[in-house]
Structure formats: C-alpha cells, structure tokens
Length: 380
View 1 (cartoon, one colour):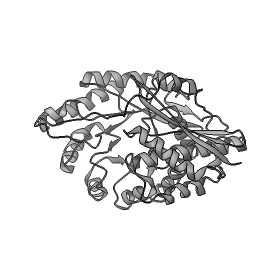
View 2 (cartoon, one colour):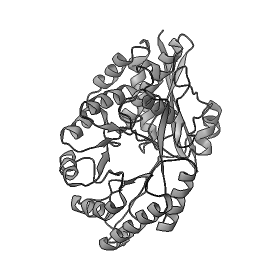
View 3 (cartoon, rainbow, N blue to C red):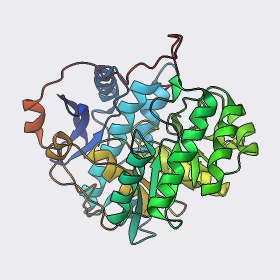
View 4 (cartoon, rainbow, N blue to C red):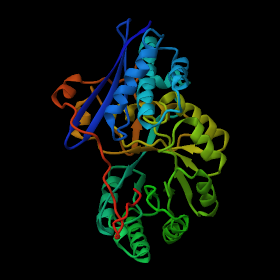
C-alpha cells in the first residue's frame, strides 16, 4: 500500500471560524483523516501539507514512525506552529489508515485500552460569580464531575489587582456553593498574567475552596520560571498546550515546571508524539490531560489516545458547533461525564466533503487583541 495524495479541506463558518482537515489517500482505496490546528494564518498549513506530500507520496502509510521522521527531520529548521499543525493532521490520518487496513480501532494499535470509559471535564463561563455558578450547576446536573473556568473576571484588566483577586475569590466561592465539595474545579489563567508573584497571590485567594489545578499560569516560553513557580504554588500546575513535540515538553519536565501535562494532538506532532510525551511523563510520575478546543476529528483522536494511555487523567471537552458536527459522519458524545471508548476501524469517523463545498474558506483566524488600560498590548 502506498500514499497517492494528501489534500486539505478548509471551510469557514461565521459561527465556528475555520475548520481545517487533512485527507490522505492510498492506492488500496483506503483513506485516513486528521485535523489541523487553526493557528491563525490557516492557509499556511495547507502549503505545509503540500510540502510534506512531496515527501510522502509513494511511501507506505503504515510506516508511521518513519514517515514522521521523514517530514520532521527533512525540514531545514525545527518546525513551528503551522508546519506542526499540518504534520500533526497527516500523522493522525496515517494512524487512521493503518487501523482501517488492519480492521482495528486506533487505540488497539497503541497497545489496547486500559480503561472502559474516559472522564471528561467541561469549560464553564460567566461574567459574574452568579453566572459562572449557574453554568457550573448546569453541567454537574448532566453528570460531569470535573469543570474548568477562568479564575478572573473577563474585565479583570480594568480592575485594581486587589479587586480582581477579591472577585476571583467570589467566583470560586459561588461555584463551590453551587456544586459542592466533590466536584473537581480547575482554573485556566490563559497565560495572561505576566508576573509570577501575581499568580501566587491569585492561587492563595482560591486555596480555601480546594482548586484542582491552575493552568497556564504564566507564559509558556519561560520553562525555567515555570519550574520555580511550581515549587512555590500550593496547588497543581497544568501546562503544555502551546509547546511543540517531545523536545519542548522534556524541557518543561526537566525544569520541574508541571504536574499535569497538556499536549495538544493537533500541534504537538500528532498521535506519534503524544504517545512519546505520555511515556516521558509516566517516567516522571506525571499525568496527562490532553488539550482540546478543536473539532470532532481531533476529539476522536484524543479519545483513542486516552483509552490506551495509563497515565491519562481527564479529557478537555466543549460543545461542538453545528458546522463542526455536520462536517463529519458521526461524533462521540459524553454520557454522565464520561466518553465511551470510540469504535473503529481506524478512528471510526470520516469527513463530509459537501460541508466544505458549501462553506468555502473566508479569512485568517485572529484570537482577538487585548489591551491594558494604558492601551499597551496585553498577553492573552
């Protein structure tokens, strides 16, 4: 079996932004699919797909490790976000092809399942403590035992820092009163706080309510400072979503900068690198909680990884939008806070091409600028 073509499908929906998929074809009539991370200049990833296809057409798609090395090591410099987004999607598509060729789900290719269901946590939102508590109660009523929220008000940059801390305390108190003590609640600072001392002050005002973890407390570029911060924090530190490959993840682990590592399958290099990162983490007594703000192909790829990974902790989840749901043949939904093990062969999911024909690419994705009260550019 040989790879004959690798193509990108990219569509835009005003309510969902850009959706970028990869489809890899073979001469055996088997194709595989994967999802590209929307890093911003999304069309850049389509050129990377074409670039990698020049190397991969004619190769055996089941030689996944060799194909990954061919692409990664064949680049002139270490690959950045748009290139790794493309390589990640291609890598997942090769796992999908191999599973289909062997008539086995992808998780069986990874050594088989180690659990019967996959715990999920849900992101909750609210401008006020009351709105946040209401959203938390809604998902706990649906059976979720784990939640995540921003610890700070959406308007915190316009507050005095002490007022922002008081508001953070009120937000967590409202959530605890709404859902009780038995629900795990983590917090995501979105790497928006510049000074590590502020993170410690924020963590301190939340500790009375038993936070599960603090995610992305500072910018991820400074792994050395992340390690120093973790030594001082009184709750678990979760990070890793913006790091590339096992090499940067190893930097983070070596600096002692993480308790819960959060690789992103669509940016870290695909399932091939996800497994290696999990093994490195396991050797250092760390758990893995995959990052996932992506669409249905990424979600299913994560579930196969979760099913077969012994040091998996919990899966980030969100509500898929209509365009995302319509773009695939099926989706896997959580039941009482847990996903079922996905069914194969391969990933067990395919692309509905007509949806991309109906929603052609519009424009690049921008996260949205944030400014401080003095109009200087803030971190997000």
